[in-house]
Image (tube, rainbow, N blue to C red):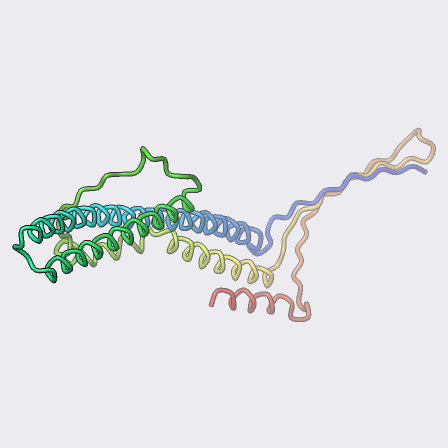
Length: 239
């Protein structure tokens, strides 16, 4: 006796469990993309912060060099005045102390600039070439405090709407809500279709064929509290 059976099932309704689970997965994917963008923004912000600190240090280095030149000039003039007995020794010592102080400030400024350059190189993962070192000029920057205070409410709203961190939080909340709905779908009945085809023969000659198409509905009345526990777990993640 030889028999062959082909059977297929198609689920029509599962209380929305798979639909909301898929939506939750899409929301989690959006949250991961937003977190990645947030990490990129954080790196950009850090590079920008260190870069402008480096520019400030280079400006301070230039100021320190000018101060050292002025102190050296005053010291040379003081020595000349001492030779013609037009200055006191204490005045010359004061000028020399001023020159030493200016030289120390210059060393400190150069050290700080080199430290910030090294920090920038670590952030961008490469060395800064000599031709890339800027030559900043000390100038006054316009104050934006008045405009910022006038539009502070708008700026806060734009930050909340556009920051990827906030987008990631919203996506995670949406994913948690979809997981709750997916778990709640376990309380609803499931509906599906069944198709079955059978071929049966005793001597590989004449064969009997039969087929069956049906609609099936199941509704679990008791599962030991498993569905309820899943709903509570999903709501706990949402809270």
